Image (cartoon, rainbow, N blue to C red; front, side, top):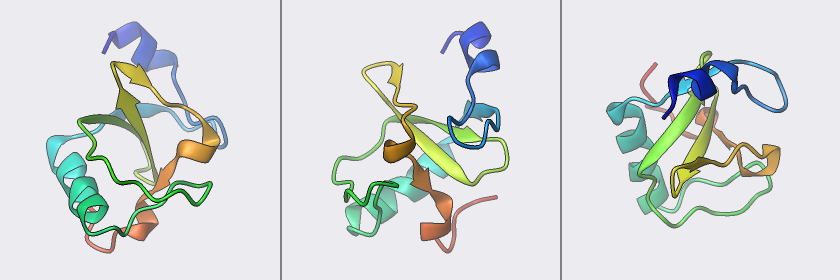
Length: 88
């Protein structure tokens, strides 16, 4: 992702800056998706594994990247609090 774009993106609710998610964070998210244990802020259960994502710098919220486009919608946010063993 373009560094300049990443520098200006932030969580639409909290305004916390985001960073690229690490591979271990994406792997953890995908384990929970596979188990059927992850929902978005709107309550939609995620079923498709995540290939790439952004995460707030406080590691509380994940935003998926689909087709190289960050999905920065509050309703599509995924709270890391749903994952008891999420890497911090």
